[in-house]
Amino acid sequence: MDPTSRALWAAQIKAEALFREVVERGMVSAGKLESELTAQIHALAQSRFGLRRHWHKRIARSGPNTLLTYHDECADRRIAEDDIVYLDFGPVFEAWEADFGRTYVVGTDPVKHRLVADLAKGFSSGKKLYRESPNLTAGQLYDHVAGLAAAYGWEFGNLAAGHLIGRFPHERRPAAPDHLRIRHGNSIPLREPDETGAARHWILEIHFIDRAREIGGFFEELLTVDARDADPHLAG
Image (cartoon, rainbow, N blue to C red; front, side, top):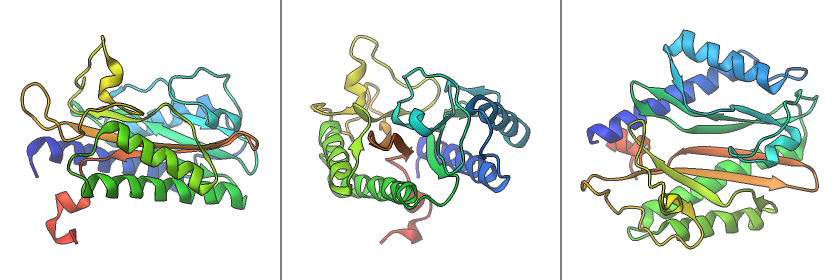
């Protein structure tokens, strides 16, 4: 694994450990405001991982707010009984970004639990397509995962399904930001190197929603690196 891949993978492992600790501590619970949960997660990340920089403006969304994307503004909401909550982490560990999202169900609602399972399936399918398609474009990957939403009985909740990731701040194109996002019609090959010849790394985001039920879910992590890269013995 090259140094950049190793650094991004290490950052993701820490973000995943943070999510696991949030769940194990029972921090996602009914009666808590989204802002309260966000503040608690910030404090935990600082105490456990020494985190000082977190470039996401909002971490927790619940109930109808899960229909919304990172960029959408909404009122702070109190988590309800039998609710659904998604957590969107964007910590920076030692100058390397992690972008990690998971969905958690407070209660036993089978539809919400199915949504959580389908999010993971959608991500796995998108990553499998990337692994098996050397010339895959950003637009083709978006169309694939958006199509999965309909196949599973949901709607895809965002115009983008991912973006670049790297050393903070990562490569940007202010004049043409959509060129570096996984969006319908974007012809950039995902394995195209950057302007310096270095490999680009991407995040894949799965956002499935059900407008009638006013619920949504979110799953994101590295597209371009996984455990098989960290340990070749896992390949196959």
